[in-house]
Length: 327
Ligand SMILES: Cc1cc2nc3c(=O)[nH]c(=O)nc-3n(C[C@H](O)[C@H](O)[C@H](O)COP(=O)(O)OP(=O)(O)OC[C@H]3O[C@@H](n4cnc5c(N)ncnc54)[C@H](O)[C@@H]3O)c2cc1C
Image (cartoon, rainbow, N blue to C red):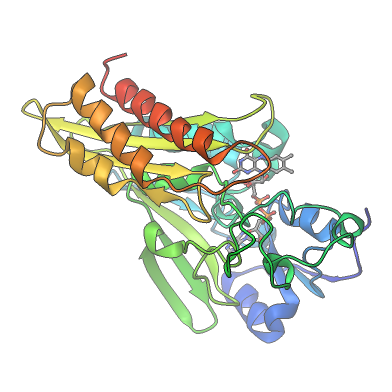
């Protein structure tokens, strides 16, 4: 597989990057670690005329902590996220999620910004150009059919990023910049359940940093992932859980799931099953059942929807049991 021709641009500042992105619009694509986009370029799933390499931009490759928040630059490598003492102490679910991405080489090259913006994936879409010529283009590739759900008018490609559920459970926000200014939004607002375009990022807009509130009042968190091969694989299901207790009752519960739909989802009913109650095997089982009900996987080539749905229940139960110290 060969890359098609493109112009490689290396802005040195966010302002310059945004100006380039605004100038070239849909003909340009951002590259950070390149571990996702280069594969898609080789498969000719994207054929940008301009590749905007943001690796040389100053000031967005560090982790800062002021005691209340962790500010993680979009270019911080996943291996640095997992090694950071501040992240391990104050946002353990994020350190665990970064350590669960693919394999070591991918964690060394891959960035937190690129991981959040990971494109949705599908067995019918993530194939070589030649393979895809054997059938009509799918919705994500510009056609009119979704092979995952043939009667559907929407694309069901799956979101499989590992750090997003951890960040959702930790209540993270993202600072977005573009030529027209900047805005900070909750991570929950970034994702849309549409396989064709999984984020609300406008063309020319990029993530500059991720802001994570530090764990307060003994809040604990974790990320559990089920995948085919432990050595290197996307999650079949990944679950992040954060839990806080005060005076013997649950004062904070946040559970987020990846690998099940076109966007990571927050299991709101699971949270409600725990808040204000004593955390026990019974309330954890109720929370796991609520997540099971909320999960609506569609059929794909990897596992059956029923199996994936059951995995959600198992992982939510295991993650909560772990953070509650009831293992
Ligand atoms: C074999 C293999 C296994 C993998 N396994 C996993 C896995 O288990 N879990 C997992 O989560 N991922 C996995 N990946 C995907 C990928 O390696 C990671 O998601 C990685 O973190 C992507 O980061 P990157 O910096 O390399 O992104 P890039 O490839 O540089 O970019 C990814 C996408 O994000 C956009 N982008 C990058 N940075 C920004 C930014 N700051 N603002 C806006 N848009 C941006 C790019 O335009 C592109 O569309 C795997 C990849 C491979 C090849």
